[in-house]
View 1 (cartoon, rainbow, N blue to C red):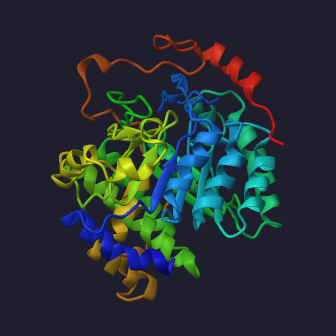
View 2: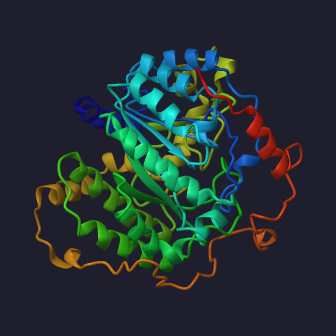
Length: 425
């Protein structure tokens, strides 16, 4: 971690002047878009790509050296990717990351086995497994589009918490996407997570992303509704007593929630964005993106002998970096936002004061109103900027929907996934 802190000033210089050339600290790997969820807030499950083989991933990761500190293995559903254990092993072998983060929908029974293999294969990395939860009981099943998903979530959570007892590098969290479908029952989620035994409860706002094929969909909560809900989450966090590194991570998490509120309010970059300098994403087909929201095609690794550096230090990325620095885009993407906050001096000052207990409690000591099962807000009307043709009701997840051209139907995709998911040796 000390090495990461010493690189932060160099990244600021790199963003301002183009020197010294630096590889990203924060890298997301998306080995496959295939998913066995059918979420109301995501259409990635409909995509099919010419995916990199595990041998190709080996070459890509070797080209990165030990520059990345934080890896996220994403999807689709990353833990249904047949080679997910091997991919994590390769990231560990070549890059020695401090953190490997993997989100999961908690559906597959093979998840605990694969998590255990990854944790044991990467002993010096902190492995964070975040189980997705967008509602309690039937609400979760509705949003996720899979009957019985909540029951499977509880089963996987119990299994992973038991596994954690014998794996010191494993952390188990709960992750919620705050959307128009869930913003009205965030209090219920807070109350559930508080009693769950999970190491952390984190949220991320639903937003239009090229990666998820959700551009134009009315999924983002109206700013006032998000602010009201997230204020209660912040108040809840402020009543907790955190120790050690958790004091720092929770302080950053509170800053992120406040940052999202501000971005939704002003519709602009609130702090400088470092996507394309400090963070990046490698998509399933080998395309390198600065982030999954814009998904600018910086180049395909297959066309560059699997050398990430050729793309990262090439010519095409310069125009994308100019656009990002000129604030021609803005978003509350969590993965990039946490990296951005590390480079924002006022944010670091506030985090430092909070961790050191400077400034007193003030209003932050108010106790949150989080009665179990409470619904303190009405479901909001959607006021995000969307195309007129997108203003139509989203389908109920239990009803069949038309697939994109060249993609399988919902049922066909589910049947295909049941066949293709095989345990790794």
